Length: 90
Image (cartoon, rainbow, N blue to C red; front, side, top):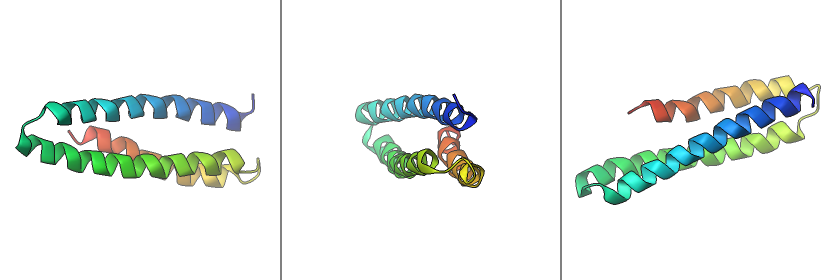
């Protein structure tokens, strides 16, 4: 397995873990009071937008050449930090 493939596999595993956390937020939103539900829905909107962004970045990582991978990886890391930081706001 190349370093590129190993990196993508590692990040995809982490991505699936974060996707599960999004589902937990959805479950909490369903059980929340009306006031809390507004907060959860805002959080979910942000999470879903970044989730979509990361999905697009995975496509770019997979299609990057070995030579161009590091540049794409650097941009991906910035997007990844933004996405994962959304889980640390609470």
